[in-house]
Image (cartoon, rainbow, N blue to C red; front, side, top):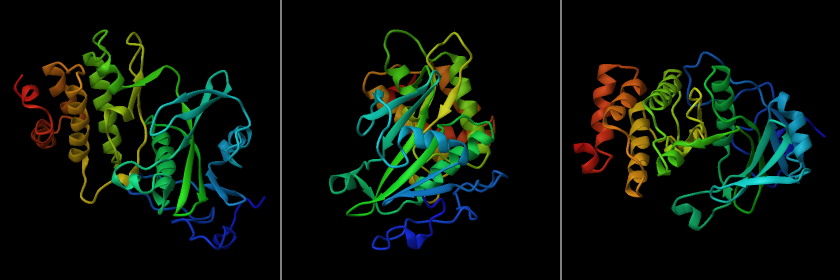
Length: 298
């Protein structure tokens, strides 16, 4: 198998994936102020299927069957998304999700399965690696695959699943008790601030994409997932990111979810902006406009 296929080797009858480069090149990612350059990705090809991964993930890519697109291990469970994604247990403390990337929004009515551009997915695996190297917990994307389809490319990801975690949305939707203590709110806000301070922005910052440990009796661990850098609109900034998160919070409230304590709402915005007075004022104005009148007045 050719470990470093040239663009010409990748099925010349199909357009080359955007940003398809040799191992000696690195792609541009949208967040440039990290001080660390993206590492080169290893690229292998199996038929029409192109797989990109970092060298330390090679064994996992082969043993799961991700390299050729055919699972080699028995499915352990599944996780919901735009479809059910199979989960495989690769060891006592290692589970991976084989994610099929599907479109959302109006375009999914016409084309749900393929993407015309592939740069966003390479950016996501690179951003994930950069963040973990900066000690910012995020989903560990072991590999991505691109397979030519009728219109564009089918994309899959191999993602490590952390034990005992759930989304913030799940906690707020759980009516069995108060799961969002002040310490947990503060930890989430500080993690988002650290993420922004490194120059990163989240393409889809919502409550489903923030994971925390389920147990409230241990220190809160926060994990940012589905970074989706390709989803960033022109002119977006950290305040826009926080406003998007507040919009997600408003949706949970509209479905009967648990509201944060009034003091915790301010506490979250204070720590998410690092206590910067100018940013805090902007965040309060923009975020309060996203929540219901009843929530603004209490």
